[in-house]
Every structure is written in C-alpha cells, then in structure tokens.
Image: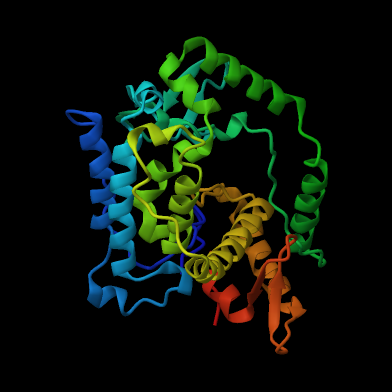
Length: 343
C-alpha cells in the first residue's frame, strides 16, 4: 500500500510493481512514436514470477491478456494515424506537462512576476494531442478543500471543524478561480499553436487508445479493453473507416457480458479513489501540502472507518455503496484504499 508521508500523500497504484519511468520523444516519425507507446506498455509488464506473487483484483488481467490487448492497440493506433485529422494534431511540441501551482514560483513583492518553474524532468517533445487534457490546477473550475470529519474536542477537533467549514464554503466557486480559468483559456488560445488547440475540442474517443495503452498494467486489462471496444464501436462514426475496418474485433454478447462484470468492479474501485481524492483535497499525483498532513491523515482514517461501516450486502457482508450505486465489499475496500492502514 502507498504511504501517507509528511511531504506528500502517495496514491495506491493498481499493483505493487513499479518499473522505471520511460520518457518518449517522437523520434524520426509518428509511426515510430506510436509503436514505441506499445513497447513501453510491454516493458512495464512484470516478470511472471513477480506477477504471480501480487494480489491483484480480477479486472487487472494476466500478463498474456495485456500482451494481446497491447498488440491490438499497436495495430489500431497505426491505422488511426493514417487519417488527416490525427496527422494534423500530431505536430511535435515541447511542453511542460505539470504546470500546477506547486511548481510555479512568483515574487513575494509582486505576484505577477514569475521567478521559477520547477519539475522539468517530465518535459519532452511529443505529439500535440498528448497534452489535450492537461489543465493546471489553478485553472480548474472545481475548488477542492480537505474535509476532516473529526469534531471532537481539542486541537484535532478544531482542525476538523475548520476544514469542514472550508468545504462548505467551497461549494461556491470563488471569483478568483473563475478569473484564473478565463485567463488561462485566453492564454492558450492566444499563444499556443493551432496544432495544440484542435485536440482540446476533440472527442476523447480519438485519443484514448494512444493515452491509455502504455499504462495498461497500472490500470488493468478491463478498463483498457473497454477503451478498445468503444473505439471499435465508433470506428465509422469517428471517420476511421477510410483506412479499413478496425483491427480490434467487437466481442460477442457473451464475451462482453464477462468483460462488463470485471469493468464494473474497476469502476467501483476507481470511483471510491476519486471520491477520496476530492474529499481529502489530494491531487491526482497524490500530493498534499506538508502543513495539511496531520488533518489529511486524520481525515483519511475517519473516512475509512465510515466506509467500512457502510451498508449490508445481500450475503450479510459490509459493503460500500457510491452515489451511483456501485458497491465494494469490506475486503475490496481494504485492497483499494489509497493509504496505509494500521493493523
């Protein structure tokens, strides 16, 4: 399990196997770059001896399943990049992919003066569509605050009440956030090349086979398979029939039913993680400000207890039920929880 530390809160990955991070550049041409994405996905598959020792959810899939899906992904993306649209949005761009507020420093005397930008290690020259969903935290509409449920007497209780009040106030988006969003929108439309603007308005279905394949082992086979199925289903609608039929065949009714059961489990676990991220104010990378460590750690413990209480399932087991009706048993909650649990 990932740990909650003084410096940051690490999110729990889909497995305990964490290979080295690989940074890609477009190389001599787009087909080479696209093929390399599949190679990255394959390189992240653990050795069979390690995979057999991991306790993975049913939706995660076997190494063999991932290999088959990744090769289908290679074939599909090679087809997709033959279209004019995908070539238009594949202009190589040098970009900083993590321009969030924690990486931007300004002058104490004049906050309009930029003094430093950190964390350039992930920057690379990649196709413009790679950054289509990159929006810095300061330009997002949603304002997130840590919610501590602790209302007991004493310092911890006071902290909990203070954070609870902040959460109530955050139901209304501050005008400063709206101004930041509008300013960012104006900035990108005024200064970014056209090749980077088109992906911002594109249907996500065009991009998901490219952006999910190399992370298949992190997220699991079921969500990856669902992306390929949806791409295949909408192949003609998206305009890819000009390059031939989709390389990924649509599953039979029985095959899809079996897949859907596993995908629902993934959705339930993913929903719970996202709810915890929103409630605790933890960013997608797992970061939390150091001075918020104590209240965040206290809050995650209390929310775990609350989740475990939950409802009672048909077999008498305790379950967690999301707002959308997705369910997890107590054992699944423990396996999914993004922070270390005390024995």
